[in-house]
Image (cartoon, rainbow, N blue to C red; front, side, top):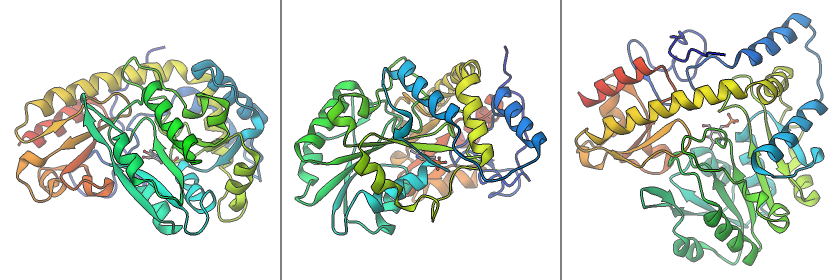
Length: 373
Ligand SMILES: Cc1ncc(COP(=O)(O)O)c(C=O)c1O
């Protein structure tokens, strides 16, 4: 079935966080949702629930648990059990639960940077002490500096945060890289909290490896956070889950369930189930479209003076180094030209901006032309 990702969709005036923040003619390429309509199967499932008309309290559907287990096995040869799943309205609450409940007061976490800002915020608000470990650009990829990682560990370190694929760097960590991280965690008795929300947005022909799938002893110390929110563009509906094999970890993580953290909505469950069961063709077509957008961004940025970026292996986000631009505030620089990007400072690197290329190609080309000036 053909899907038209070029079709313009007006999002201004729809309560869009991304489009309704900046007035007028600004092209909004910041917050990480896409401008594509969700898969037809998702829209049909939501319409059916809407038509039913009763929106009462809801339980997590057993079919969704089964669909997730089946997908993990099919995509990653990762065998998980339905009762390892803890449903959440989004991955962000999962990051906060991890910071609050997987670490005792005074216990310390390791945080790779640059990184999606909610990881840091979760630790600050918990509050729990943490050390930032800078990722390094090696062979054109943002990867862990294992020497610095080891040096950052303290006696009271108990948690390693991981974001794979990486936001904002776009890295798909290799099996070998993940094995070394897992060995590190095993050697020092660390829990791993791995945010894998971008795992179905692979642009390069490289496999995603859930770190918990490496070995049973890794699975027993890992909380994996995942969601169809990004890949199927349903963040405003919202459904996510944690995969936690170890019962003790699961119990700790669930402390706020049905309290400060609410279940996903009926619509979140319905959209997630339809996406997993019937969204694969749409997702494959979207990935082709995003690859061509990525290539356009990389070609254009390579010829813009003062800008550079690493190749984006996954996600729809380009992490652009503006150090050569001579602008004190690169975000303000591009906003003045009519393009709203995410300020790098949000991820811990003020000389960078993050560009969301999950949009119609004509609009992307226009934004890139504005950036060139
Ligand atoms: C790495 C990462 N985790 C979590 C989120 C947000 O997830 P959710 O909308 O499910 O809370 C994002 C959104 O940009 C993200 O990039």
